[in-house]
Image (cartoon, rainbow, N blue to C red; front, side, top):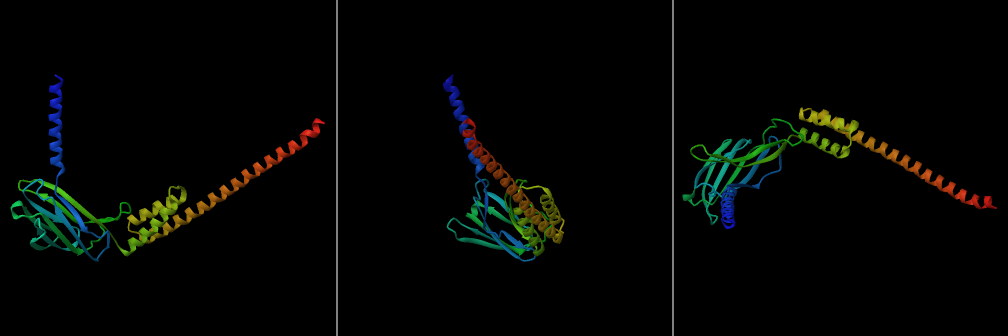
Length: 251
């Protein structure tokens, strides 16, 4: 009885391991060159590599999308030896590339160029980001799976200045509350409303209030330390005088 139960358990574990190993392998996209940030309206360029092409399917279509304006895709296919098999240039926000195991393709390199887009929705945290490249696996019959999405931070000169002011104020305010925290929260709200000048003013106010709060706190700590020291000195003096007077009374 015990041996049959053990055998059944081992079979179940093997089946689970097989299923897990099969589901773990998947097509991957890796950023080879991807700017962390870019100013709105400036030129943008990024390069990606798609590998493990046939861990799931032998034939499928690679679909690419980007938020860049005036985008151009350069798609290169390479074999196992690293030799270039083909190159295709496509204009537009999206492009497709058929992937077939019979073509000896081992990896695909995708370079996308374009213009950094406008900020559609301002956000301080998480920072304003746009999709530089999104990759999807599609198959006939409706099978679709996300391979990976790669983003970059975008900004304007005004939004960057406001963000830097809020960052500086945030470091000063820290975990403290009170007026400084209220001003900082208001600065963030102003930023997300696109009122950058007001955001800067409020951030500077928050930093000033945090500085004043620290001065007051330090002053109070100093006064407290003086009081404690005075008590200790006074108590020590009283003990000293008491000990001096003790023997004379015994006489």
